[in-house]
Image (tube, rainbow, N blue to C red; front, side, top):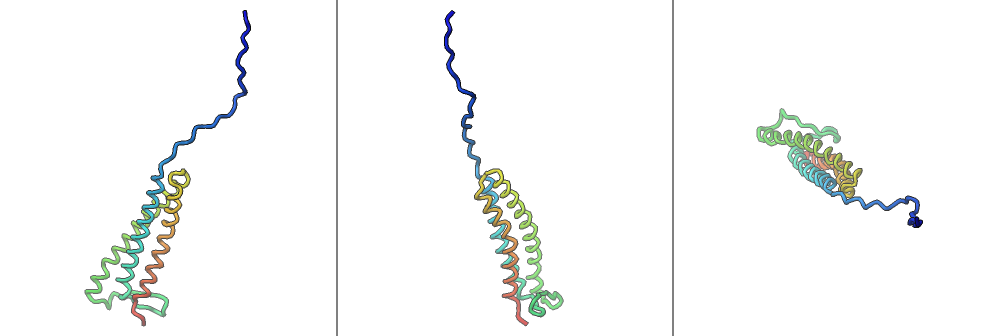
Length: 147
């Protein structure tokens, strides 16, 4: 019986794991697209609402604006009606789509599925309501008749 030396194996070492497959950036891109869409449409709606409602406003003490619908003509009332519908739609759809963009952006950042797009989506979705309100307020102030 002959003794054959066995090959020498080292201790079990760590081996490099195969690189993880790249995850698609779709989720982050969807978040950014939704956020930018909400941002642009919200600003457009705020400008339209401010331009339409501003001339119907009455400034009180230089700090507040109110609408007295009893003194409005039929044409003014007809112009004011779509504003309420647009404001409701802006709040409803802007809120729902803005929150969706935020959630998708957070998931994209956490799971590395379009991290850069997700960060942009989060930032734009968070800034949209603030900037929309500022644009609305400035437009009302600029178009309201001064007392």
